[in-house]
Length: 579
Image (cartoon, rainbow, N blue to C red; front, side, top):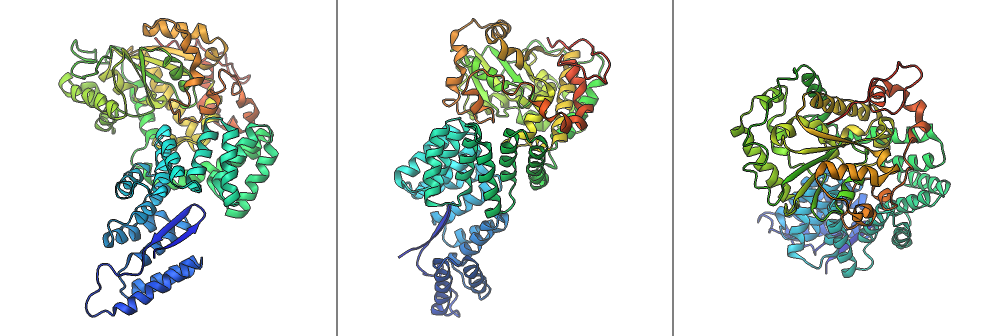
């Protein structure tokens, strides 16, 4: 019989101690089998530490069997050392390539290292071998959630529960998804089912805490989160949620400190991953170089440029929706999707090939000198990647919604000079505070939003790039103020529709009903389900003291976009008019 080990959200299955492959002739098979048996007995008794020690001894003695390798991997995983667990799991799979339990363990560690795409691939292999393996479906849901494929993630969780109604990973995953979409009653029901079976389940407890905050019980949420910290020890995610509970009580300094602990911890964790692809450094350098370009030096588009040779399907109007994270792009994008002529791609990066090619200190110069023959392949690659990300390109107007594309405006201007740019702005202080407070999926842009100063610096650099590109007259840009859109939705959307060549449709107003069906993965999802609201307008005032050190980065843009002048500053210049 196979033996199983279960602890919280992790379960491994290890078959009977049959050696595979057979040991060299000089080894004693019975002795090796006995060593493996001791490891499994310790594991079955719940003594993971003892099992790991015995597993190490067995491997040192030359035993070749997947069980000791999996046990050592599990010990590393339980201590958060995912990178150290992976070599053991890969070695176990080399001994038993079809072991789906080991594949799931490998996928868990890949998710722990924020490598969800690789994890999903491993889980697809496992499900190819064992289609009814509930844990594989459950962890596939977790990997897909990290990839922002929330609709597919929900299906995977649901399938896991069909196969195994007591699966805690799937139940907790559904709880998190419901909480993300603001469905707190359903979120509580799922979370309570998890906590009934595993009272110390951190993910489910955090879902409950979020529901507490949203339903007006922040003190209860704080108590719950501090209990988790006492049980599980310091954890970046717990610090972030604690910040939310403190914020809801008006305890600004304590909340700001908690968000800072979360951000600094993740900033250190991911520093190596994004050291070679430093978006902030590149954006600041681009802004500096653009400032030096005379107005008449930016290349004029060739007659056969823009969409030529790009195979864009039925698209005849190409729109880039950008600004900055937390500036209102999700609201505007969902509203536009109410028009049956519009297709939107949510926060992907089909520009990846061009961005990589024109990166580096000399990238802007090479971009400006590039001929149409050099640009055309990158245009084609853009549309190919858009299709690969799920775009059908069967509608007249295509919206590429990526808030951080502002720093990529020079590349967009050369590849797609006829594109239309919707540029959302919001009070810079609210933008940066929200970026600092919210929990984003990690990528090369959001890495810099983990600290308040990083958020402010990247914001300044992005706005400088937009400012200089507008001065060079390279693109058609319409600025949409988030606060104006919230205050008078119909008026602002009429302006947007006119800019894009769309007619008015009442369906534009029903954006809140599309949040779940479109699987909106941004932190604004739960807010958008409530419809138009001004809850976040002026929130920065509560944190004015904490944001004061960021004034050199933000105040010029506060003034430029017309959000008021601090008493210590001179009168603001005329607001910039994009387009």
